[in-house]
Image 1 (cartoon, rainbow, N blue to C red):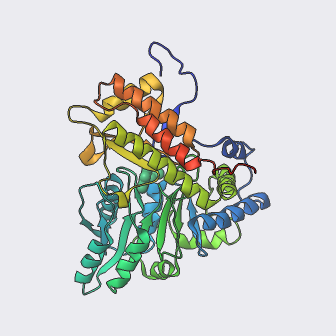
Image 2: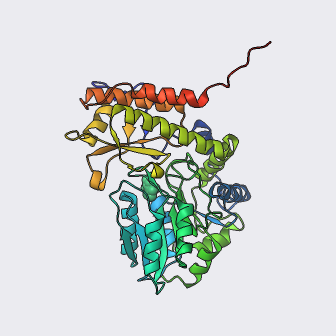
Image 3: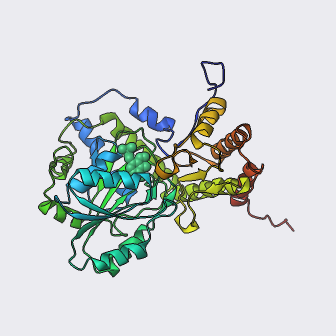
Length: 402
Ligand code: PLP
């Protein structure tokens, strides 16, 4: 907010990697009278949402919609498929992988971590080698994040599936798509994922408060023998009621209308175009960061995220102080820093209902804030991003008429 003022003019630049700005169309779709969640109008809307969300996960199998944040869907994935004391393989890509592991411990599972320095995604070769050593096939699930929001490192899910198969291992594959769904290519059935965890507040462009479990036949089989206690997150009653367009409890009725609108918007743009837009915006941001001579946390381009870029602060400069200066001066929010990068980075989200011009505005605010904060950098990062966007939109060369 501007100094000495109680009002910040103009629109806030919400450059956190979710929740993302909710488009007016989605807001309007939710701005309706509340309806009976046991009535015919609701059933029609819910059936549409339950079918629509399958097209986003690219699955023919059921998707469970929870009235809960992404953390709830993490719990749903674990409690519906696993039993107390089960071994689970996870990869320490960053803060969110660490939190999912902590949850697994609290639930009575035995998670094991493949450690990283938080600057890469999950390496399929390491997963394969780890599983090959498990000759007794005791590991029941491999849990990875498609996109680690705390560091901006993505993981190659199709290759991880191949690695599990190459090890001849029967473990379930569970994937957190919370900050990749509807922004980065994700193919639930084709990639052979057993349970995907999704959230509403990022690529789907909804407010927080709704989350998903996309399933596979193998996950539904695992449900039959899973012994972890479950109630609210239990799939069975949910799936039975969903068949007729209802829920076992009062769901987030208005958000389901918003979800239908968000899905419609994604298909109007075309999912491939949505992914290409996110790739382009991410590359523009990285070009600016490189020009500034700052370091991108993700240290190997093959793991680059298309939804968030985490930027290391130079020695002696605090990432959180920088974030608060940028907020106070330019009304822009960045993602906070966590864990081993606490105070040492800031994160620019570039996902959801956003475009080249918004990202250029965000980068301009960032470049100004770097100057004001006295962070050493080479000016001109915004121009580097603009040049890249121009090159991506360049009109085809016209041949002069004869
Ligand atoms: N997983 C990832 C990758 C996330 O980015 C987040 C939140 O940002 C979560 C899990 C937790 O989701 P929620 O905060 O909606 O509970």
